[in-house]
Length: 145
Image 1 (cartoon, rainbow, N blue to C red):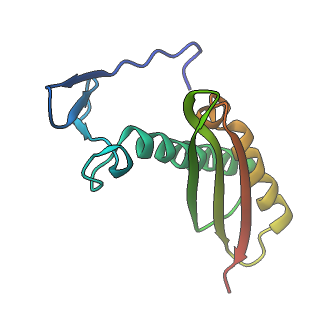
Image 2 (image 1 turned 45 degrees about the vertical axis):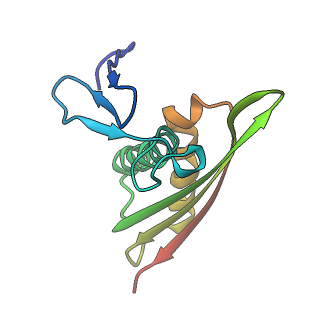
Image 3 (image 1 turned 30 degrees about the vertical axis):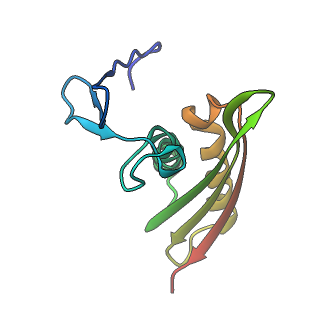
């Protein structure tokens, strides 16, 4: 890992109607639309789904790093995130998110250590650490036979 601080740059461009196009050096362009709740088509990535997706993505990458450093054996992991967007004191913001994480481990894996790694990944995730929304995690370890 490189020393902090890290700087990230994204450019957004839009016309009066249609998609917003996001670009960043070296990456494919990404299109975003409003979600159905805000009059968008409902079949494309939106700022809301991108943010919730960033929580899941960052969590999974954080877990990978923690498991690698700790020598934890695992075969696969899934993370489902649900976030609540609400208006509080006249400000629209995400107020809560919940994560359901399912980790599959081979026989002989210390399940308590696996659970600790899952919980540590939430504390390590820079995206969830950057949000004011309250977050909760329901983590389950499944031993494969």
